[in-house]
Amino acid sequence: MKTIIQKDFYRNFGYWTNSPFLKGFMSPGFRFIYCLRKAQQYPTKHPLGLFYRVLLRRYSIKYGYQISAKTEIGPGLNLGHWGHVVVNPNAKIGKNCNIAHGVTLGQTNRGKSKGFPTLKDDVWVGTNAVIVGGITIGNNVLIAPNSYVTQDVPDNSIVMGNPMQIIPNEKATEGYINNRID
View 1 (cartoon, helix red, strand yellow):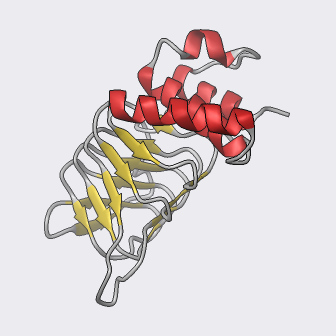
View 2 (tube, rainbow, N blue to C red):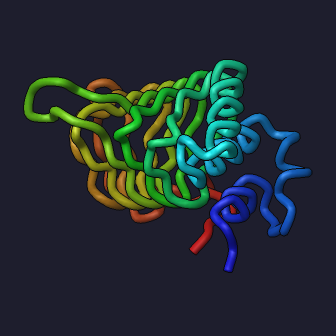
């Protein structure tokens, strides 16, 4: 059985390994994901939990990722480029998701969309996209760069623009999400 870190490694590099630490640390995105997974693995007051949370904070500042160890994230996360990524700790991210730089998964405090976003499986989020509110992004969804998403998106869709437009497409993420895991 593969560990969640091995699944993340496979999504990022395209092959399986028993020691993702060595090759993976050449990539800032995977370095951050590795520390994130380790911080999630240990309780906050455990010495290794504290160590990985401090290291996670260091990489957060260095690379611009603001993703809390409290965030629920499925296996196979891919942070394609390092740069400002903000994810609310209460947001949920499914498996096989790609998040580009400049992305925000944020909270809305009022209105009918009050809450935090949920991304299901096989979601590709393009550069500078903003996803806010208590909304659900379905499976196999591509969110185009610079999109502003404020309402639920059904499975098998492409989202683009501001105001957002939803275009049904059965092959929305084909060619965008590489090295999918089961």
